[in-house]
Length: 157
Image 1: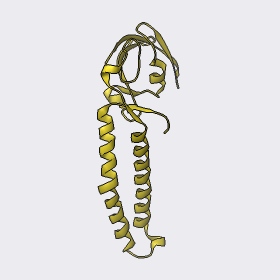
Image 2 (image 1 turned 180 degrees about the vertical axis):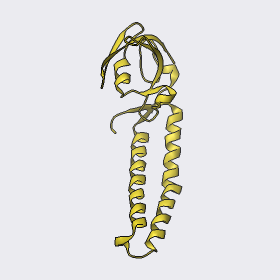
Image 3 (image 1 turned 45 degrees about the vertical axis):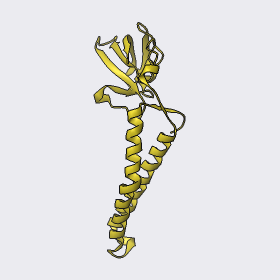
Image 4 (image 1 turned 90 degrees about the vertical axis):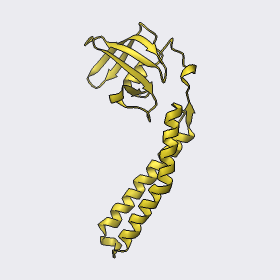
């Protein structure tokens, strides 16, 4: 991931906590698993050792990803958000012009995205399409099933 990563203060704290946990107890647990598997003999035919080493690789990749995210993080405060147009951390009520369904989303960073909670990533097709739109404007979003049109009904924090 490159560039600036806009997050809320709470999300940055969660990322820092996870990073600390991964670097301390997480690494210790992986080291214990590798040592335990090593004690079982020939490493060439030791599936537990291979699995532990693979887990270590995934673990270190997550550590690197979180470190990069924390380094590139910029905290956005809700009071600094301009609600005259859709921007990151704003909540937007939209109407799908094809189905006439109204939905509400909060535009968030990739780390915070959770569709079930109504939080969509600023880098998602819908997020990209809505950015910069004002109330009453229509966003055209290219989706796998074609172009979708969303009318911006309301913007809040």
